[in-house]
Length: 264
Ligand code: PEP
Image 1 (cartoon, rainbow, N blue to C red):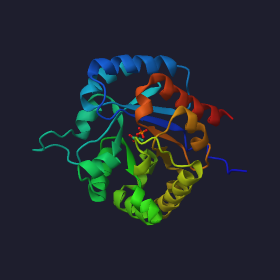
Image 2: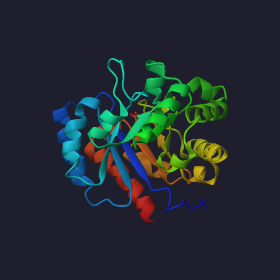
Image 3: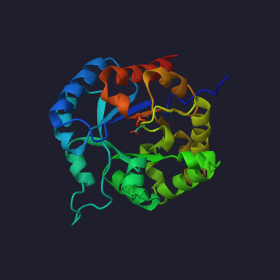
């Protein structure tokens, strides 16, 4: 029998990462559709992360759908300054943003973000009362060369270096194997849970017993037909959903999987 999850501390969380999709007016329509579907959901955290330019429209639309929180897909590590094209924590807060995805593999690979940069952003995020969703994950080559464990250990330690232990409840870690993002290839529940368990052990080593209560969510081709199997694993507390979060019904079905598991 699988060990039980802590139902008090590790509240399930499902996050939609819209990436560079949806204009502001499309955002209103999609949030209206999602909001109507999730209106009866309780005791979970649900987060939509649209592009920056959609945040005002999203903030407006979410006011009518209390259960959905707003997230951003990135932020700058400095409070303000001459950083052309960047967005600060206070700018996100102004639109009611509560979460921020940091160190997504697309940011790491395409925009050269390093663990040290992610660590600096995570510290700034909590200064602004933003909950960081810090992403880690190995490439296909690293997995094939049996380096997954070493890569995850080094990413978790370095991406959370200096993170304030008294803010640890605010942290969410996302395990996203790069080979599973947007590819339709999904980690098996066992593969994913093995890494989630490792992350939980690392968090406990770094932050003490409260580290064990940090929510660790899985991302990488999560769809309605694989969500239940993944989220029923003991160390998987929810999902970071890319493609399927742009389809209101698919996103709702994934949320329903998490809700049903929680209720059972
Ligand atoms: C993601 O964007 O973080 C992601 C996991 O995408 P997808 O669900 O499309 O694989």
